[in-house]
Image (cartoon, rainbow, N blue to C red):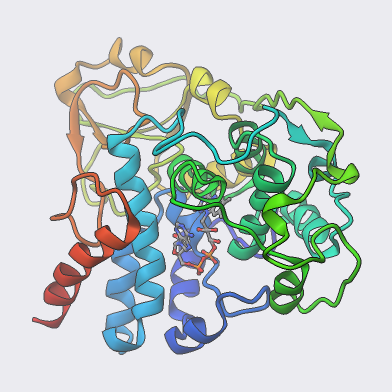
Length: 368
Ligand SMILES: Cc1cc2nc3c(=O)[nH]c(=O)nc-3n(C[C@H](O)[C@H](O)[C@H](O)COP(=O)(O)OP(=O)(O)OC[C@H]3O[C@@H](n4cnc5c(N)ncnc54)[C@H](O)[C@@H]3O)c2cc1C
């Protein structure tokens, strides 16, 4: 289990209380910058972006000092909105800019690209379930824009290993880098990587000017390609015990909110649907992290099975769940997720259009 990400609810709150918004703003782009490490808890639905903002304000931080962090949290909410409106299995805006295969470079999977900062970041991802945002961007850029692999399989590779694996942030970001969800491809050269990772490497295939990057031939190191076919190791199931006189609250990979109906007597069931994890496989450390967080919620039963099998034991009007685009076949009473700004819910074609609208509400909500 990762030492950096203790699978407890308190660990998430402690991380929020340690945030220094000014330091975050000045250093977040650097590998050793003061980033929050909150994403595994946010992605598993343990805490929400709204709760982060409200706790920071309670802790005495001023909105004006939080703008950089607010924008990053808004990126998260924006991608969640995109996922509500678009089928993310396809290119969102246009076809990927550069494309010559639908696999993943072997050198990426084996952490052997020759770019030391990237290879170290991949090894850390395998060990720790986390990668810094800039390293994710560099990796995706090498894969999609230099090796010219389609974003889909590499995105699955990264999602599989990330404790914060989130299908919306993940797919939208890969497509953003690859130019399928943005107006241009994202490139970074070795000099940029050196600056933000405190490295000083030269002579790599990225050691060239920005002008040259878009025309680079696929480097030899990235030519061997792989197919990945990940499976999820599923945990044992509890024998469901449903009290028909109580409501049934359904939790899943995206909803482990400990405050949800916390004071109510209820059947609490974590559904682990095999078909879901076949479509979105996760590594054993991600499953273990999720289960440990679920166990923090009193009386949680772990059900390996379909939503239908819960429905067979209690009628739909007794079942409550939180809205999420991946809730396929759910029936019952759907409740909304937390948003920093619930008022802005339509599809907007760019983050900047979203930020323009949502920030007005955000500042109005929290300065009144
Ligand atoms: C190719 C690629 C794949 C990604 N896959 C995922 C994923 O599967 N799950 C995931 O949660 N994030 C993903 N991200 C977004 C981002 O990298 C992570 O959210 C961030 O690095 C998490 O670390 P942190 O909590 O320390 O971030 P901080 O910098 O401390 O940011 C605070 C919070 O803001 C949100 N945030 C920050 N940056 C972004 C961003 N670029 N996009 C969306 N939300 C953001 C996150 O909720 C994060 O926890 C991906 C980015 C890229 C480029």
